[in-house]
Image (cartoon, rainbow, N blue to C red):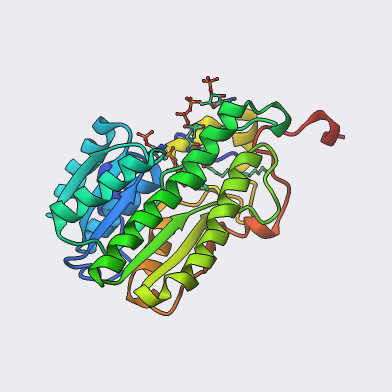
Length: 284
Ligand SMILES: CCCCCCCCCCC/C=C/C(=O)SCCNC(=O)CCNC(=O)[C@H](O)C(C)(C)COP(=O)(O)OP(=O)(O)OC[C@H]1O[C@@H](n2cnc3c(N)ncnc32)[C@H](O)[C@@H]1OP(=O)(O)O
Ligand SMILES: NC(=O)C1=CN([C@@H]2O[C@H](COP(=O)(O)OP(=O)(O)OC[C@H]3O[C@@H](n4cnc5c(N)ncnc54)[C@H](OP(=O)(O)O)[C@@H]3O)[C@@H](O)[C@H]2O)C=CC1
């Protein structure tokens, strides 16, 4: 049976998910989450707030960010809202300055904002290719570099978690995002070494198919098969990903850097994947 794909949990449901970590785990720490107006970013931000953190959230659409912030404030946590695009290096620099001014510190950066559109690579326009590379490689890089410069200059430790994707076998239909995510993964492994002297850890989480509204970008034909993309034959939920972020960012992950945690129900080991539908050539 195809799983119901009216994706996403309500804010109320996110506030009431059972916690798998100590509620004081991130007490008084400041966590910046990009793309927190929806889906995974919203769930990650709310979970850090429930674990005692102060939040800074960013994304392009202010209304969605304000809605997330209102939910976060119900937990008693402080939350600042920053409307910006990660694709503009100057806006990223301004963002990191403002977060330090507003909160006086930064402890964790969750580089979650991202996305792509499904299309055979042979048809990509230059603008489409650049949009995806800017969103999923250049943007996360600007965020990492600005955060790390601040940590180096302040002499304080920091932790970065980049949300990537399960790209190990390629991903037909989203070649542009595969290229970008591979870049982020190997950037992270390299920075983990370069930035270890500053006390900065850099890790990635690679989610498989997770039920979020972002999934609506895929054609019905492809989405109908997504719940069969792993041997558990279902979508993961947002907490599967937010828990991995909390593990990596928090004290349990203090000896982990340059690593990728795959949270995919076994997807990387199993089956075929067609993000833009199965081409006729492969139907027989
Ligand atoms: C058994 C089956 C198993 C299968 C299992 C595989 C499952 C793997 C699933 C993949 C893993 C990842 C999942 C997710 O990431 S979930 C969703 C995350 N969210 C999104 O993807 C959000 C939606 N995407 C976007 O917002 C955009 O794609 C983009 C990221 C590029 C946003 O950029 P921008 O806002 O600048 O975009 P524009 O609309 O201005 O477009 C810029 C140019 O990009 C081209 N374009 C955009 N959309 C399309 C499209 N749908 N088709 C073709 N081309 C597109 C185009 O050139 C745009 O320029 P023009 O508007 O001038 O034409
Ligand atoms: N759901 C899944 O199964 C999987 C998701 N992922 C990745 O996880 C991340 C979150 O995805 P998900 O929550 O599902 O999807 P969503 O589309 O719901 O979330 C993407 C978020 O990124 C923000 N964003 C996009 N472009 C920019 C930009 N240029 N500057 C700032 N913010 C931006 C969007 O907000 P706004 O448009 O307002 O800016 C939105 O809130 C993405 O990187 C996605 O590719 C990876 C694998 C699987």
